[in-house]
Length: 231
Ligand SMILES: [Zn+2]
Image 1: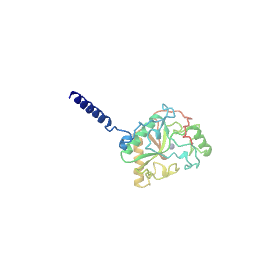
Image 2: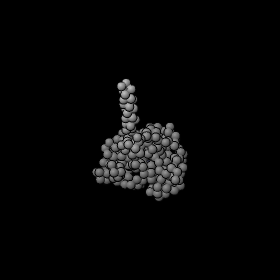
Image 3: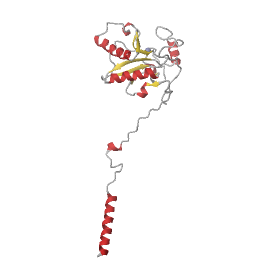
Image 4: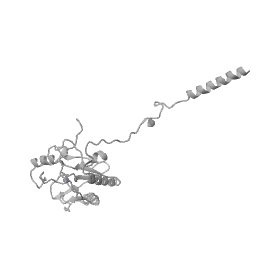
């Protein structure tokens, strides 16, 4: 009888163990799809000196980049930059990122046409158009050559540019802030951009609705040329 009981207990224990091992384990295949997705933290690879520069498009990918001098769609009809990236000095960069965030809260965003312009490209531009009314002589250097100026506009939630009365780099009276004969909508769009920029210490110039610069810090003219993705 004791022997029987021993065997009974032995089989019972074995069966229990068996059940335990047979219990369904969570394999990768059995996981629902959403549990298979491993979300890795976003890693930004900086390929420049981050103490001197910020690449706006790299740190906020929701900003629309349309760097005109990296295309032939510019007033000299020639591709100047090897590729389009938007570099600014860290302080003005921070302000532009702030401006974009505040526009996003209203369903808008920024679109950037030109940012830091390396001195060698300013020379190229000057060689093409040696006229100080349109291009700053490279020896003088503009705020763009110092990484403190930006050319930009506002886009709606579909990425469409708000009407500003003239295209970017249109040289004429209708591009001036002082021109008063645009529609109420255009005036309101320009005002939205100007008020926002001025609230962040980014100063306009009278003749170009798209140009703003940060003048509270002095920066050297730079020859830094950014890296481009390998073809
Ligand atoms: Zn400009």
